[in-house]
Image 1 (tube, rainbow, N blue to C red):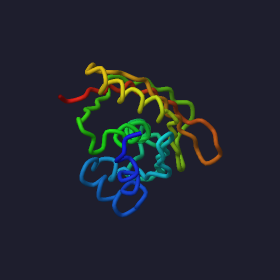
Image 2: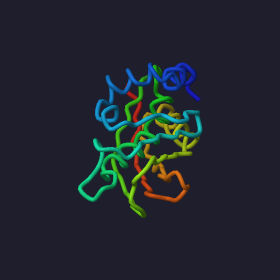
Image 3: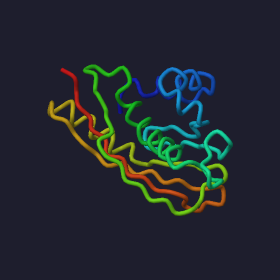
Image 4: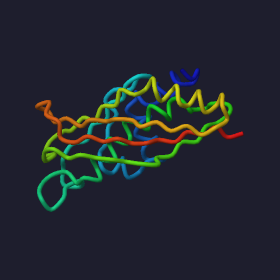
Length: 161
């Protein structure tokens, strides 16, 4: 684990600091109402509640808002690993797949448990000097625990030398 991860974790787990972080780095996520529910080295949970601002014409949450929350659950795990790292590491989404199972009409929690494999990919990128890719899974569940949507994001990590 990156030695700076706990420092980044403190920012994310502080509601006000995280709000400023979103506003500065991910303003669309701030506007859509994404919230970090849980953030640890191995797991991240992001919630988003269905509301007027993120609805579609079919009276459910717009698919892209779900994708944004799912991506954040995978991406924050990586961002925590590259935070203030020397050498710095770039990260980029290079692929995405999704399945939608139910209408999202309440609070949806997106969970990614791939923190270990993300950290390993980043370490491999630093050690080898070669870009590394990993496919990360995020599942969105409604308040009843039913799967609403599933996402697979392929991330690329490369050390900047």
